[in-house]
Length: 57
Image (cartoon, rainbow, N blue to C red; front, side, top):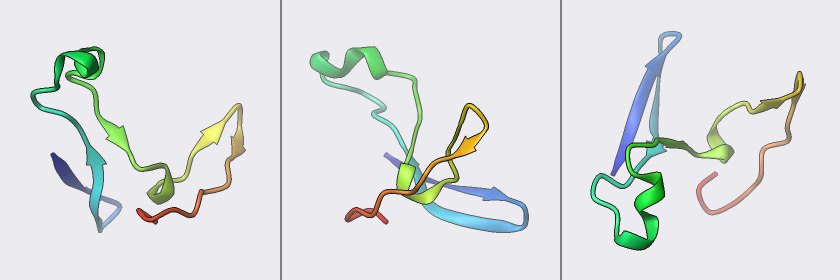
């Protein structure tokens, strides 16, 4: 299931996904949201990470 986010006066389309009813093998991620790394600014230990270029970019 994909969702858009409104923040800072902008709408980012299909930036978040999750499995509302995961298969048993994916049960550990039920209830969690995943942001596409290609579409967000990711910071680790104070350093902005490079965005990967993939089919979802």
